[in-house]
Image (cartoon, rainbow, N blue to C red; front, side, top):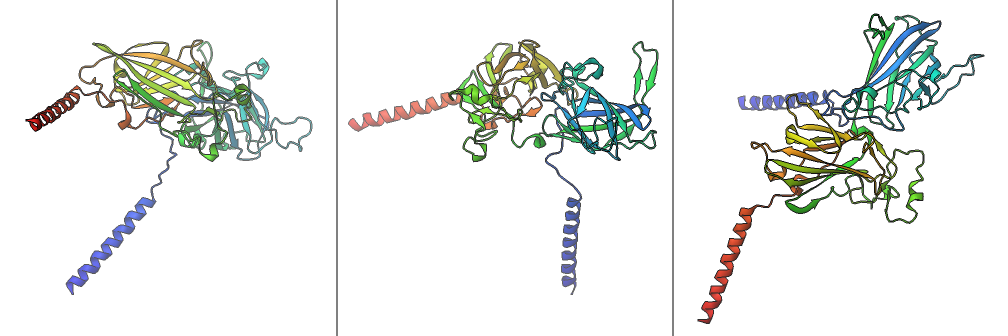
Length: 455
């Protein structure tokens, strides 16, 4: 009787614990697209909306985008910002930006609003916009540099006059459903949060004014949302091994895949220029040179020379994309010897320390007017530099792939590395001598057996 009771209680506890575990698992949500970058954990784009004055039927606001990402920038054709109005607001006028569509403004007579859409999309003005339509930090064609590379140009602004809105802090309703494209997908924006009003200091520093009302929107980037396939890969080589480790096959796509038909061009194709010039509307969609890896960008890391107290690396970035010139490109490399980087040729360098005192991450980019523009695929579609490291006796080694980087980012996207077991290995003199000795012994024994056979 007791054994039966104990069995039933054991089964009860088992099922109860199973249900509890399933409940706990269901309460957690795991998303592969969560936007977290381990090398830039605090990177984001913050959109600040400052109401600077009230109008008879609404307000005037300055909208400013701050790119707080260390190495991820927004390149041409630039950003586009969208949202949904909480009520029936309209945009009367804009400076430094414009909406892509006006919408239906037929109910207005005389003074026609700039935009009447419930969900407007705003883009930056182009360089050369008349001065009376500009404000500070506008009119760069939507291009925003990264905070680590060029903080002075990591900001973009426009001014907006909103009508049919509230005219006090209590009646204004913040917009919702913010979207940011740069120029394609990848960014996810949170809800607008009302914060302390921004304070503005006059040019002479003697007077401080503040906004009537301020709210912030934070947008974070996910490479998984930006594109379904990687955008760059890494190949490796070294002076101590003849093996050149290429990018993994089909890293960014496969030539034989039917869905990729027409997505690559053979560089030997007749009339190549006419084929490449047909860009279409999606100019930012890559048209790559046909390769085994099919990536728009390849980074090659070559361990070039070994000195007594130093060692030298050559980095080459090759553009296989016929549709894109990469302006203000940058490279982020993680390697334990960056704390002893001595000399860098023809690239700019900045140390990134996402893990506090550990200095193993470097940001590299081109020198202005020299190699800050990575040209499209072709003879000029590459940039290169050499790095000289001082050896640290406690850590330096060429064994087990130590001389190769842990990870590489190009323009903020994580590049695919070859598998570790494919890295160029350091020839082992001891093993070669062991093989040679065994071969010698076997040869000697074979010779002795032949001689004995004739005796």
